[in-house]
Image (cartoon, rainbow, N blue to C red; front, side, top):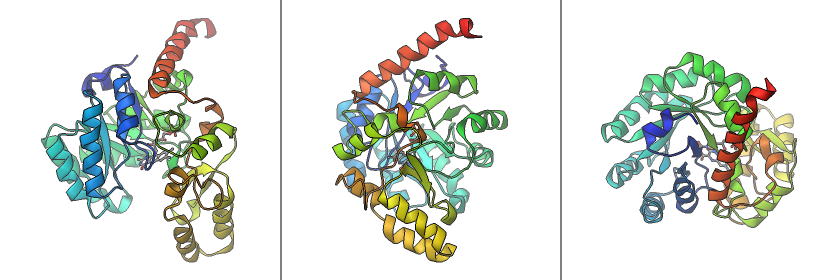
Length: 322
Ligand SMILES: Cc1cc2nc3c(=O)[nH]c(=O)nc-3n(C[C@H](O)[C@H](O)[C@H](O)COP(=O)(O)O)c2cc1C
């Protein structure tokens, strides 16, 4: 397997578990790190006390490198930054919005001064270049097909090689990978590592409600939809009643009015699905286009081991296919 990202971070496999709000806590991240990958806690939206407690907890669950995300546009970002530095978090995934690109170099520098590895997150070639210029060590790139918020309209297969050609830092493919084939393909496209979200939603350690996991296991190819794109707040998730309501609002109202209505409807929607198990009317079941590949519950350790095994088998057979 490609080793540049492994050497940089100090992990065995170039398999990162992406930060997921309400879905990747200390337990999941530690399990992935203990299995040889890098678990990243999606706690950047949490209040400072929860954020700090999760960091303290992950340290009791693993002695391997782990990460958390930090969102530079939130009012408590500086407070969380101080906790990250005090607790010596080894890896931080730094997330931003275009309106906050100007403060990216400052956050990257403050983290790097403490020898913390900084992963930027981008959805376009332009954003990847902005991240590289801001000084991040690695850039995680998410295509149109990935789970979560979608900021670019280019699919992974076309996006990754264009980013690889445009930057000189290692590129991590953060969309669409659910098995060893996805890892092999990512490397062929020039990525140095993969960042996986959706596949880890159906792990025993993932904290989301059982209804959320069942909805994913029952879904098939084509069951996700992008909502909110017309109001610059695109999210990919299962097509349920909430998603249909959002799509109708987008059709019916002008942008400003639609944005207001969608915000009212969607505030807390991921929490309602992930924590309360409300997966139809009020909750948003966020997941990627690869949902049809997610067919069984496993431990995070089993997932990482299976990914590595499949990837290795593919490589040993690849010359026969070409
Ligand atoms: C439920 C869920 C929540 C997510 N929350 C975040 C988040 O808070 N911040 C972030 O940068 N990415 C978030 N993501 C995106 C993941 O970190 C990762 O980029 C993506 O899931 C990879 O694509 P995949 O789902 O096809 O594996 C989320 C994804 C999911 C499925």
